[in-house]
Image (cartoon, rainbow, N blue to C red):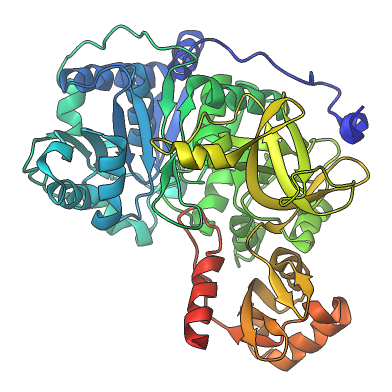
Length: 564
């Protein structure tokens, strides 16, 4: 009997069977069941399930006409917009493989995604097309793209929309600008509307659960990004599991603002909502005022996010004017929600922030908090059909309950391995209790109830005079200081201790005159002395990735380079 058994949701089985169908089949079923139901809402434009499925079929036909065949990889490089959803499912409909790419990548970075995945077709927005062209043209002829499908943002929304859903001024220029189509030296550039209107029939859909569906790339600590091999079954398990876990229904209305190049947005929002026939209210980028208005106006019921988004929304001077009463589920992952913020959501709005844990390699969740018994700053308990342990990363033996070690996971959502990297695949898995477990590289512990807590990344640790300091733990404590809006803990060289703790801090506007000495004094009162930052650096903002995660490595590298 597992420690967490007594907290397992009573409405859920311990494991589920993964459907043998493809991910596109979920859209097909939803469109047949609810043809007139809203699937997407974007800046005032409404798209029904019938319309969405029709556009997917049309685009799948054009992809097939471009030469896309079963198992071919197709790059998808876009900000959030309806065209991204259409393109994602059209690639799957055409029996091909989605390669989601962060739209912040530039040409030098994009070359790797094109060449490593062997993609010959890419789909993008007009503002990003030039980078893909430059990347393709810089490659040897045999590795270049043969087709580039390009959409304007205005293909997906009504430019004259007014009211609560109209594009905010900060977005207008890049959303409304009509970029001319570039020239691809090695092939053809096709406009979005032309591709949808071409009239090419979609091919017969022949792929199933075991066929490759997605090839998302993950950075890791060294080397170039590695593609994660995900068949339809791994994503399907977490899409269906997400519906069950959150007690999802076809009446769900989700705010979709987490990026759809990231597994959380792709699986835990888009695929979950399509599987439950819900409605997605899309935002192209994060803006707290727009988010507040959309939640109020569209009566959003579920919001999966990054904790920094919630912190930002609550800090809006207009927050009191937003109607949050429709929300019944709010949660996310990627970083721990500060306890003070989680408690405010509970005390003032009756919302329990549901945290979870997952990786690109695991198609999002491997752990999640039960809706009826969540814990704060907690990864949760092992997910549906999932086994997880905590081991000593040196001895590979399971550690006693309460001790910190590396989290390992086994389940149907685990990827098959790294694309073209059998060496990296081999080192990422271990045999344990007769099963194949993924080594997450994350350090955690299990409490007396069987809940998992992150202590930090395996390699992110500060050794101060022999004392091990886990930065995430210090950051969470610092969030409790009333003057601190955000904090990131890094190591700084210390001639006596070897390493000392440094805090890079963003102050709240209302506490702009707070001094470093005041924060250090507060830390001394609230945490063990060896954890107390010796240095406080004030900055206007912390560097963040496209998914909203704080880029602590960038800060650490800058500190290391300065010390040299």
